[in-house]
Image (tube, rainbow, N blue to C red; front, side, top):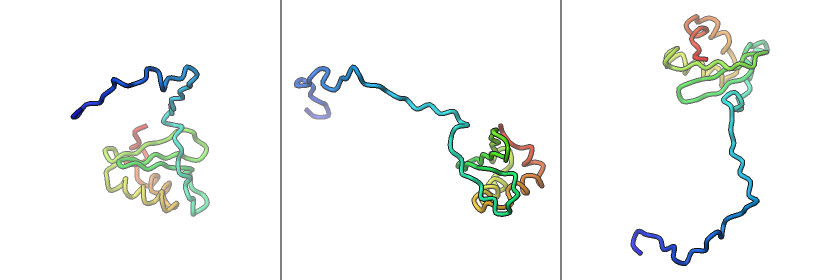
Length: 108
């Protein structure tokens, strides 16, 4: 049969299992694992981070909340700078604190 499948010899219920259990993973956004911040200076306010194509998400020391910064809110250049600082593990909290448009520019 060209472009078609022949099911005439199929066996009904062959792969059916009444005892099968399906586990559908459901993850809250705040449950995604984050990368621990390197904290090269030893006194950073940053605990962990997550990088995406157009965002960085940061969790600060002693907080469970995550702060998301995107290129729309803070600009592509500053976003890339924050990503580099996060990977290096040094200077990220200082950079955020010294730039008011960043410290107040998180999405959530």
